[in-house]
Amino acid sequence: MGASVQPSTGSTAPHDWGEWAVQHTRQIIYVAAGILILIGAVWLYITSERRKEAFASQALSAARTDAESGNLPLAANDLTRMIDRYSGTRAADDAVILLNQVRLVEGGTQVGLVVSDLQSFVKGSHPDYILASAWALLGAAFEQENRYKDAAPAYAEAAKAATHDFLKAEYLLDQGRTLAIAGDSAAARTAYTDVIEKYGQLAQAQEARVRLGQLGGSLPASQGKPAS
Figure 1 (spheres, rainbow, N blue to C red):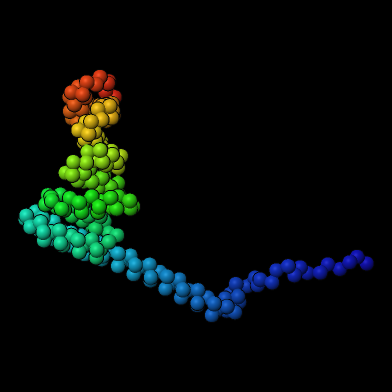
Figure 2 (cartoon, helix red, strand yellow):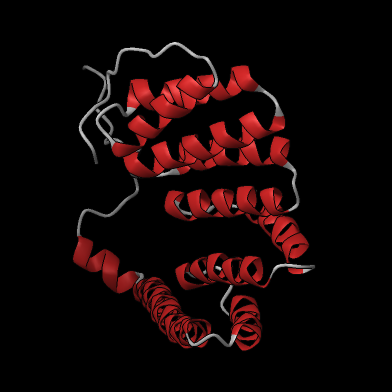
C-alpha cells in the first residue's frame, strides 16, 4: 500500500476568526485601549499646540500695539517674555523679528543684542520668510556697527532665503552697497550684475544699473523674469 498522507501541521493558526477573537478577548481589549489612549494623547497635543499658538498670537498683537504706540521699552519687555513663554510657535518667530526691529530703533547697546540674538537665531530651523527677515536685520545691525564686511554676507543670505523676487533683488542691492562701502568693488559689481541679470524687469534693476555704472562696471543684458 502507498504511504498514507499525514495532514499538514505547519500552521496552528485557527481559521475561525470568531473563535480566535473569543479566545483572545483580553489581548484585543488591551490593544484597543492602547489605540484609544494614543488617539487621545495626539488629540490633546494638537489641541494644546493650537491653544499655545493662539495665546502666542494674542501676546504678539499686544506687544505690536505697544511698539506702534511708541512705547518701545514696554514692547521689548513684553516680546522677550512672550518669546520665552511661547518658544517654538510661529508667533514667537515673528516676535523675534519684531523684538530686534525695536532694538535697532532704540540703538546704542541694543544693537549688540541684535547681533548676538540673530546670529544664534539663524542657526535654527525657521520658515524661509522668517530667516530672510532675520538675516536682513542682522545685516542692518552690522551696518550700524560699521561692520560692512560682515553685513554683506548677511544680506546675501537674506536674498537666498527670501520668497519673493523683489525682496531678493532688494537684499542683493544691500549686499552690493555694503561691499562697495567696504572697498570690495569687484564683489559689489557682481551683486549688482546679479540683480540686473536675474531681476531685470523689477524696479531694483534700474538702481543696480546706476550703481554699477558708478563703479565702472559694464552693463549686462537683462534676462530678468517677470516680477513676483
